[in-house]
Length: 66
Image 1 (cartoon, rainbow, N blue to C red):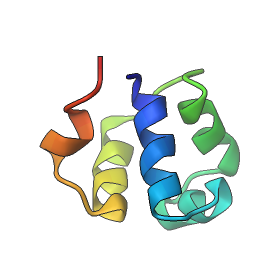
Image 2: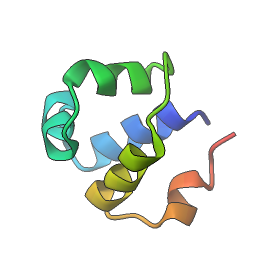
Image 3: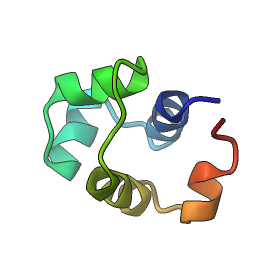
Image 4: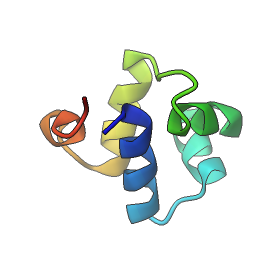
C-alpha cells in the first residue's frame, strides 16, 4: 500500500472530505488530493498532524506502507 492509499483509507474511516481534512491540518484540498493520488508525499511535519488527526499510532499508520 502507498502512503496516499493509507491517507485516503483513514480519511474515509473518519468520514472526512478532503477539504475537511485539509482544514484540520492546515493545507490545501489540492495537497490532500495529490497525496492520495501519490503525486507527491506529505512532509514529516504533516505526517505527524495526520497521525494525530486520525488518532492512530505511527506504527499502525506505517504498518501497511510499502
